[in-house]
Length: 78
Image (cartoon, rainbow, N blue to C red; front, side, top):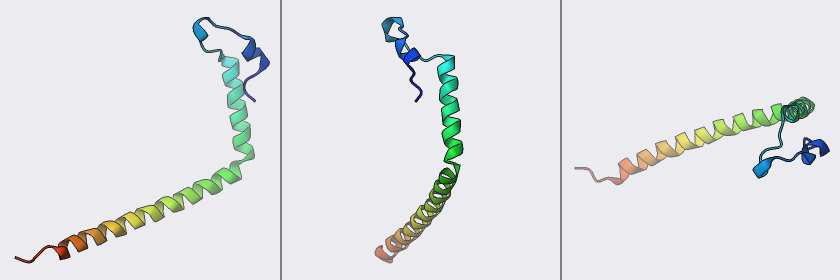
């Protein structure tokens, strides 16, 4: 969507970038439009990711606590 025929037609020495300010503005407009149209899906995925991070942290904390206890139990008493 963002690469137009006009952008493709431009040529720069040494294969430089053909990206202009108007290309950037058009790209930003497309990103904003898509983000707005898909905001419900983005918010749902953000909530899901947050829940998954909490679950991962809980599993890590539990495995760390279990690992410390097992290590303490495995050492002989002096």
